[in-house]
Length: 116
Length: 112
View 1: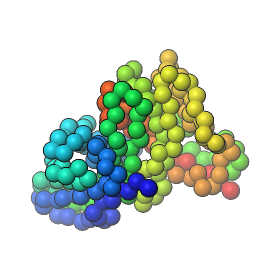
View 2: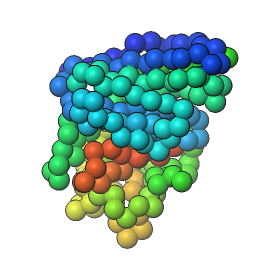
View 3: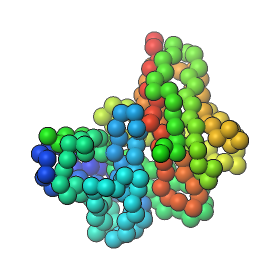
View 4: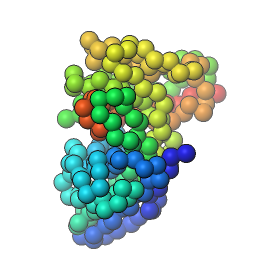
């Protein structure tokens, strides 16, 4: 069974704090993704990574950065948390594919972040 | 600008009846479509997918239909069961990219 784990289920931080959200997958997937889920907006892609030390901006990268030092781990960083970053954050992973059958993404359980 | 749209935020059906969830997309480059199911306090899980070379894919009670000319797909669940109650997300991708775009989700409630 593919397993994607996220470091915290619930997190409460104060405005201006630096926040780290950690994600680990155990299936040797090349691709890793960070989304946020908000009511009425669905899942929006923040950043993704195809390989170690590589990163690509998604649709809403502002206010976030990422780090991928090891293949199995992908971190999302909020440099200075703001109240509009209160959300559910979901990490996902998948195999890399080039022109062939697409591989589904496997999701972690999510981290509910509240910024006060 | 949402490239994948699910215009119905919620749907309620009776157990045993058909559930039809709809999804529209704007990017004509999308060629692979997926449906994910999400229960509260859990991450989304893959349900069923369809490639743009097909117009139908079936897996047990779940069938996905794709109408490329209308840029529309739908998920049919027959018969619906109370355990199907969840939020369903439509997602789309292109063969050249490994990332995907999601719709806003539809909350399905199946009443006993």
